[in-house]
Image (cartoon, rainbow, N blue to C red):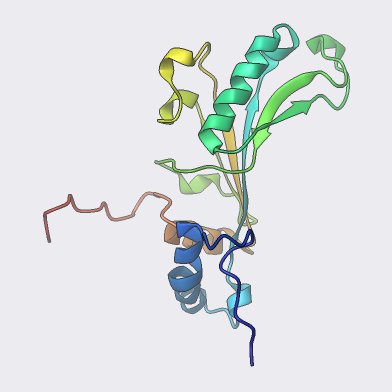
Length: 185
């Protein structure tokens, strides 16, 4: 007899809504759609990485603090300071100086191009302004900064990754727009 599975890793009974949707509905659907032999062959999300490069951090420490706070607010998880691995004299950069912040989680975003897949099932996009996130208070922003988002999957190719991300609700071109509430087709 098989052991019952835990509902969450931390034991409090909470399971994220998106993970529950993936395991109960999307995974069996993708197994049939992609014609894979096992549910373990179905692609899944490995991680989402947010990265914000901060060139001015070498001059002013407050810039790094603000970027760290903003990325932490966006992701809901503490961001890490990234430091230079080697010195580059032309950039006046020394090894160990802070050059950016990164975190590995995100909530929601909209409007994506299918050309941003890398050929190995991973997806990248750039966000020009951090103020598009409702969690960021516009009055607290000292400088408008962009950030990079990298979504790493276990998919073997772009088609599998696109099917996975579409199933998770990522808005790609060609998707049907949801009907306004109260109206039926």
